[in-house]
Image (cartoon, rainbow, N blue to C red; front, side):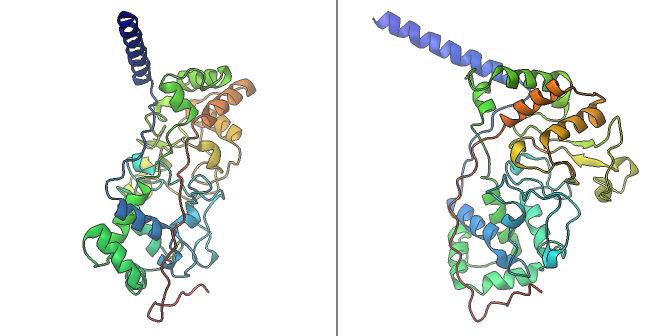
Length: 330
């Protein structure tokens, strides 16, 4: 009996090792669950992420454009900013954004902390200033206690605000997709069409940009490698950051995790269906005219990348008072 148990255990360990080795050989890797190092900072960051008082109008929060009920985006071509300003670009998802080499489509922010400060002071987004936003938060006594728990000090400044928001956003990962389960050895997690779509995704070259745990986000690439992408958008991509002509229409490669939830697609938000997005990418990036069967198979695979969405309990925000600067929405 002991010999049988030992053999069974060895076979189980061997099967697990083979499964892990097979996963290691794939260009896409499973997402790991978030590791929370400072729960108090994450909780504070969640409050600030949902607090619309960081905006001048008192109406727009981080969650307005990166809605955690809608795949971490807003599902419109470009976001609505202060005084109904139409944003110039499609809001990228906040989910799994910690895995990106930089933030924003053009990579102008090196990390989530730097990114968090941008929209607050952008006149076309939240429309405030860092000074005003901090005055608002400082005027609310309860916030001082939350900052003390998170940072060991009641002092409130923009550096701490953005660090806390980044700490919360760092937890917004989506593990346990059906494809991740397949990578870990559950071969029944995806069907034959989905598996065929993945093989096609690899064979035609999609993985040259869309790989790693986030299935993207790790490099910059010109949009329109083989065929120019026709758009009314005036956004220049990396050129706006580097000033180099060769960086025109070069963008950070977006993650494909949860892609079925983050429509519309591309930096201009001009493509509403995942099928059309796949066709377009095949043509402009790979110089391939994909047939209907191939498109359907790749789309089927892409839908297996939807993982567990963050299970967020909405924070109860501390109230403003007579000393709180008043919002100016109009």
